[in-house]
Image 1 (cartoon, rainbow, N blue to C red):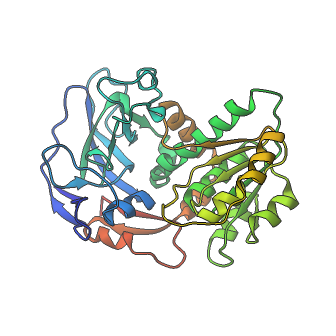
Image 2: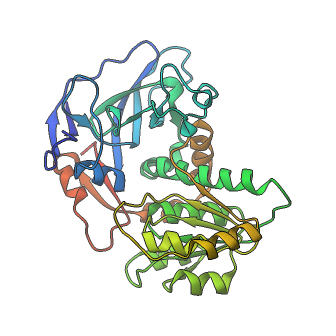
Length: 350
């Protein structure tokens, strides 16, 4: 069968290649691949920045934002042929840390987890794939093609879960959220904020293209000014940072009102040095009881919360997040930036 693979140690080796057909174990689903989303992580692996193939192999099958349909399911698995499913990305260490042992593998303490399409386990960018039944999440059939958004939605479902847990240390009733970045993660974070009944503001530097309309049609407010101007105007109780841009990250550290919670979800590249008044920011965080958290990955509970959120969303709006679809045979084209891109998807069934 065909799959999108790469030798992560050699930039420029991304390509569609032949790989062996998967053979499911007794506890695994056999799944027909429908689509995979392409994100910054995939592009960084393609650039040779990181990524590890399975032991004993040179090439890794990419794709961690999956969508597939069950072809075969073992008896008693809870799945049936034809179910729409997504595979959970992270797998805990076989000898897990305490967090992994309690199902919180997104909070792994020892770093010996593996991840589909990223670290030591093949991803889902292939015509067929297998997944343990307890590592698969069933989607509402109504989601259809929009189901490929589940994995990024799980990331922001976790971010909101962390907001609730941290805010719950004292009385906490935020009314306004500022999301920095109107890429897929930012837009999905805004979606969940709107579903919570919050006054949602999204900041992005784009002044044209689809992003402003996507935000407004969600019922949120779009901004293109700097962080300080927007935060001073809206006084957010929660900030979700989804750009990973160094200056934006620094700016949001002091962007909330008192007792604010800021969640950093964007991964910043090292090597850029900026002037930073640590004392002033530290003083504000301490005196206002603010909290800054980093959040990445998701566990099964977050995937299920994300599936519920997507099922409640406007399907037409979700469909507009997928701005470009590329067939598997031309999958490398999905890594080339185009004006107006929001979420680019590789169609595995074409």
